[in-house]
Image (cartoon, rainbow, N blue to C red; front, side, top):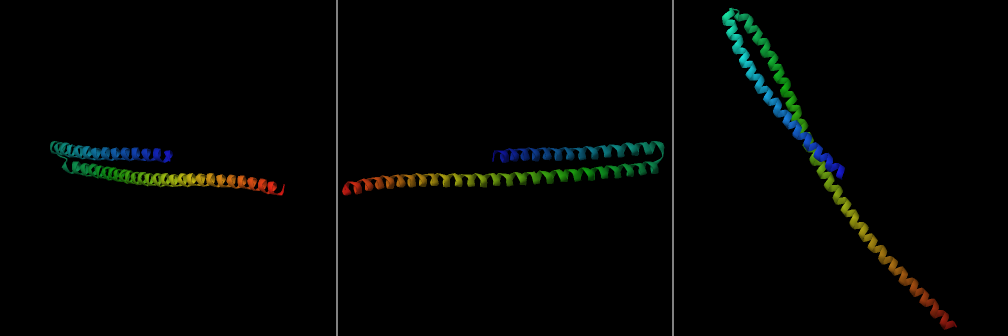
Length: 146
């Protein structure tokens, strides 16, 4: 039971860690978008200065595609982290429910053992009374015969 409780705490910690990772991914996506905007502005200025507009546009499209791929990858990682967080939370609540059920079963078992011990004591007391009665009966029979 204690092991399950420790595992529940570990799963909760993992869920928090995954949530933090998801937040970090989101920050990174925002940062990359800002960098892309800066890059687009920088490349646009260079194109005007150099007169190579078509070349710059092709580079920007390539960089934009790369960044979109990176963003897609980061979003996939974020989604996976969120799913893992959700799974961990679900496992944690399932473990808590299991611990609760096991605790209840242990309590029921302890109650049954207590009742059984009480019944055993009563039975031993009855047997002792019967043995005492048997001894007294044998004496009386012996006294009556004697």
